[in-house]
Length: 65
Image (cartoon, rainbow, N blue to C red; front, top):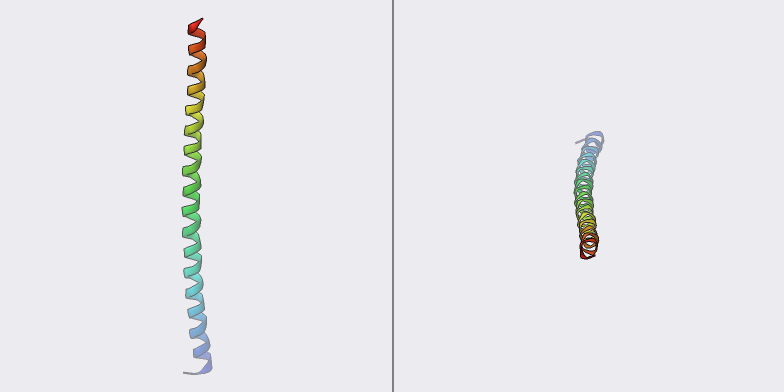
């Protein structure tokens, strides 16, 4: 092979490695985004449960009088 062919082959290998790295990082971002979304949903659920519990306590105080 000539130097030009060797250089082109090296460039293609670097390009493939770069594409794999970008795909890997993209997958990580998607997983992190999904994880964050799940955490937000759990936090909202817990907040709703807290509001329900506090609302039930207020109702119990009112009905005892």
